[in-house]
Length: 185
Image (cartoon, rainbow, N blue to C red; front, top):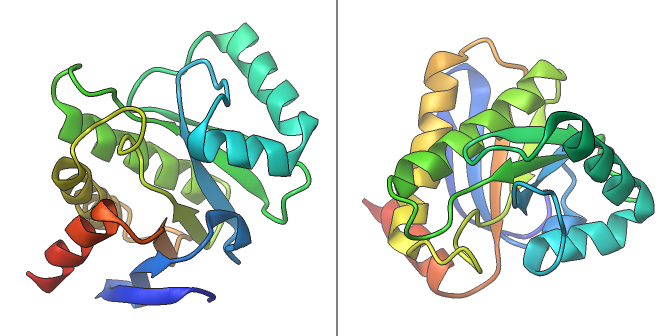
């Protein structure tokens, strides 16, 4: 796997959680997670980068999904095509905005839903970016705790999951610092 791995964690059954300093769009996993909003609009940040790289099919499919089913609720995740990207799919996880309340739980639920979507499709590996830590302004320490919690709880509940590798992919900065501090404890 590319990128500098900051901290691997091993789990029963040969499962592995890695924190990597890397570009999410250059990952070599089966799927990536998008830090989405409920409308699946891709106006900025990770979502815009994914939409640009994937091309119009991802946007069209997301728009159609929202037309049919309505906005994706906070704490949930849906899958679309990866378009021009080399992944089997893009999982759109809707995290909370700061001030909604229960932000840590909602971030953990959004990631759990994303990992479950990967499991339902039989995917073996998934990479995710910081969820809710950017324009949604959830504090980095809250996000970092939620990320670790989501991985641990997912594999505790789904010990038979096809998902063997989960990667948190970040750039250098304060969120990586918070995550690294948790790895040390």
